[in-house]
Image (cartoon, rainbow, N blue to C red; front, top):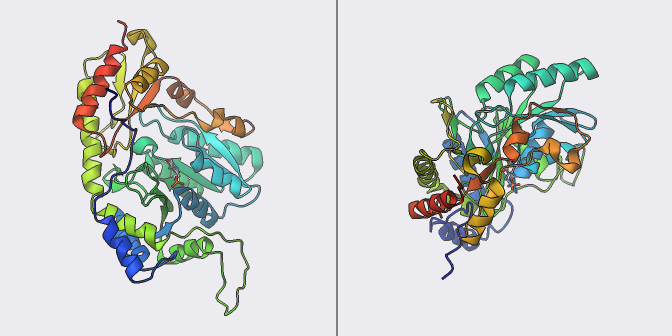
Length: 380
Ligand SMILES: *Cc1c(COP(=O)(O)O)cnc(C)c1O
């Protein structure tokens, strides 16, 4: 008998979602605005804290783009971007006609190296006579980037930070929620993230005024005239009242689900504790509190006699989804011309590890089975 498919991560419904969707239909708020949107934004503001003002948008990508617009990124500008990320962190730089400058990772968090970032800022200023317009830092797989250090450096050079917390809802660094460090914080509610709205995102802003600006650009940049007057290029990026209803249902379980992600991380760590050559990526110190959106392992070919691709194929034959770690942006064909500051860390990660099933749709028994199957691949 073929085993039930175990996916990397799917958001799970709480059962409350239908009630909010029904409410939207009953009150005829089937539009990209309405009571669910307002309430969802308030709930996100309460959840994130730090006095953030949250704009609910149509996707995390739209939120990255809007954050760059509000940071003043324009044609011909450069934007420092973590190289080891999903393309959605970098592509909006190009939407703005700007150029991403990719910066490599540090070995413990796997996120942007603050030291290399500062080196890149100085070198761009020396080469171009002007500083990068913004910085995109990302919390990959939910592991916090060193935000306190990043904000300190960015502050010294007066460069705004767009903090991509699309994978890091509920993660904390120095006790503070990810997404609340940067001038702008990005969340994603796609189907595979910590919570879902069936596709959606949010931008956390530093003030009510900046949230108003975000919504201005997200609703076609209409000026306050009785007729449609346009003085800027706008976008159709607002979240629908139906999607926000799903989001409100999801907010009732966000902490329960995050606790489950963390429990599975501890279990993976325990199961591989005595396996030489398999390393579970864990919080580097007490300052970090990852949501463990996806659990990840590094596989040392010498110590194990196997590699990530053989393990991936074996798991696939067991109907278990896994995926190689991100291929850094500076190695992507589409970005072959982009300036880059490398130290080899992200390139090495790409060839060595896998993401493993995580989240509320994965049980502890599933994790035990997955760890056993991985151990079967080890040759010595
Ligand atoms: C998912 C994701 C995004 C984009 O979010 P969407 O809602 O899918 O547009 C951006 N950055 C990172 C790191 C992501 O994982």
